[in-house]
Length: 167
Image 1: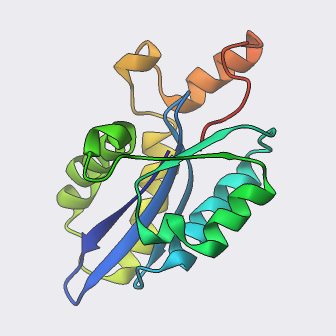
Image 2 (image 1 turned 90 degrees about the horizontal axis):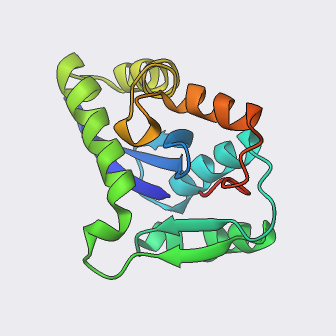
């Protein structure tokens, strides 16, 4: 599941693209840029692909943003044999898990630390995503486990419900 949000800093806005594994709610790819173009989403997708080796047929879900509908992005998805899914126009509920992640990120990190500079974003965001959200933040939908721990348990159990990571 993929989405984009903005982060206001003192001098401008910067943009965050994030991809979540819907099974574990883990943030598996993200990118930050001062530009809101397809290269932002492609960078996040490439990070997710480097962390996972998804089999053919996995579902990639996003909104209908031009970044996700761009020729370059769609070609990368097709190259990896993803099923492409997009939310209905103007319906944020179709992308609720990504929206929830963004709300958590803003409430528990960005607003608390009052990001002011691009360096703040580049320094704090990876820490929050990788060390706090993925490793420590409990999710009621995961039995009150953090995403990394949930995935580790699912791997130990050879969970048949997780045939591929959804992006």
